[in-house]
Length: 561
View 1 (cartoon, helix red, strand yellow):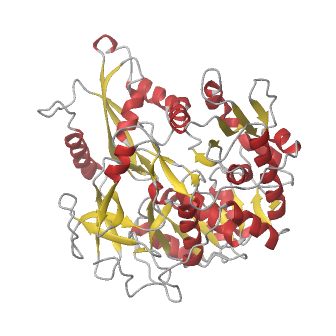
View 2: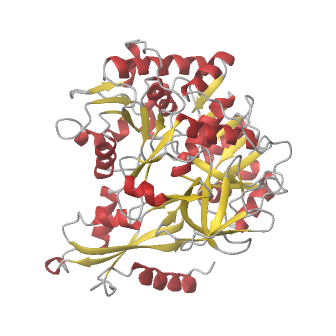
View 3: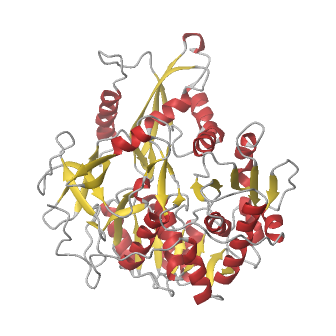
């Protein structure tokens, strides 16, 4: 049985972790009372203290309750880039007793529409730069009745020599439509929220993930499951109130939310936040603020190591570089260690598990490895058909049981039922990832059971992209596959059959440009190939696997690993 912690468990750590039975908002209250004047967030050289953050989040919670009519259990959309306002909005929603629906700021109107309609959200926090994607979804055209609009520059109060993106420095724009209110105006009302009535077993956050059906599904996480990964990460990596974290992974994603926001906040650490990845600004901040922890994905590391002046930057404060989402190439990990003296610590998790179920031990990591099952996680490798547990070294589907598992998919009993199995009276999540466990208890992923593309750590579900592409008037059929990409790991390719009357009238680049305007950039096809037809099985289904295998064979010839 593979569920017992192995011999290489991190020294000094317990194998069972007793979790706080508290509301996630309580973390901000505690840190603000312990360290009121300590920097919580440093944003392009502007400091937001813990006490300031608590006051602002509470005022926003009061606005949600008294003006927007938010009551416990309501879902509230959160659509922003990383910023102080993202962190404040997240905690304001929780203080109001509501549930955060964090969405990718790259999402376009139709992608957002599904999240709003499916979750039933009628209130949103949205950044000014993303308002064009949300305006069409306001009442009476859509389901949103209220939107609090954040201007990032409201939290730029100190002079800086750092390069700041234009969308961050943009001034506040007037809002004239009904239902819209500027963030600063909502805070200025100084409305106090009512007593907090929700607790650890109430819903806290509902990130959306996609699947083979093509429609994103809301993962229902309670305060208890959110607390599990944030506290676990703090203990695993030894995060303390004196840690300084470079927070450049997106907060809407569970990895960044747990590891770069909620965990450090729980510890009372300082977060150095950038709204957009910039290797030069990141390097300067590492040096200026003595950053100790950097959570990154492989594409960031590739870019960072390519900085021509990186040898001139003082990186001696770094004590931990970690991440997940996609395996770190071995050569890249070696270059990073040569520069910093540090191993890249990889982990593994899903939206359904609110980030990590596996992390490599810092004292003995293995490269391109998922790591060890963390506190109280029972992880096994089973035969995907018979569900029998497999011995070490044999490849099967990875399944996990632990305190970080979601309750299920929002209003989708069939998908929830398909996602879980019962083993020895315990509820296990089927990850859809194929892997094996070695003799020392480390887990490795070898393939995917599900049809999925991993682009720079973002999961792209081909069925969802295909469903969006069918909105193009010239497309008769589409099949989406992954292609090897030296920088992103994989990129998205679409094989397209045009309607007969459109052939010769629409170019492949036209379809690429259209897709870029109608879906998030990471899932938008970077390559489009027109074909006369798509291969089909005897039952009429498109044989996507055959097309994927043909592409993989071409990639092996032109882009050897």
